Image 1 (spheres, rainbow, N blue to C red):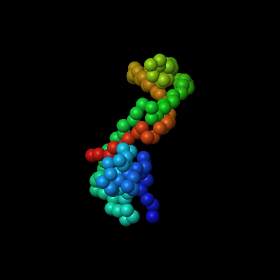
Image 2 (image 1 turned 45 degrees about the vertical axis):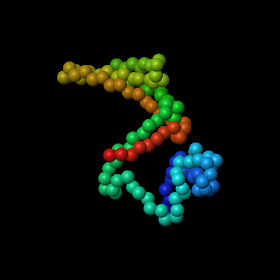
Image 3 (image 1 turned 90 degrees about the horizontal axis):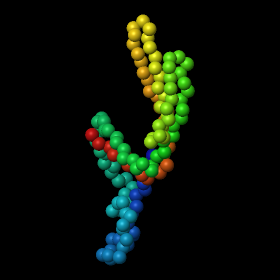
Image 4 (image 1 turned 90 degrees about the vertical axis):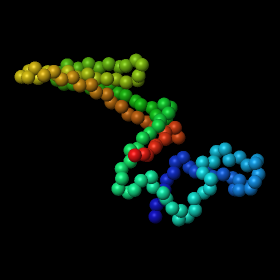
Length: 126
């Protein structure tokens, strides 16, 4: 049987926090008590419903790398590195002679890397 993975880990208050002492530090506790074996798991929705996952990211949580894309073999192309954002954009222009249609396409290549997953929160909702 597999267990449920929880991140960040649950931080349980000190074993002595059940006493009436006001000197117990529970500042970092994320739960009131540890779950017991066989505890019931309460799901957000029913099994057949769909949820929309959302994420909140701190800007220091990820690093996004970009790369210069190769130039197109046909048509007219140009590449521009942006200064305010670390991004390289390729523009590709093409024309269809028979119809006079002009096509323009913009491409970027991005690779995100998670640096600190503690700065990312996933929220599920409907």
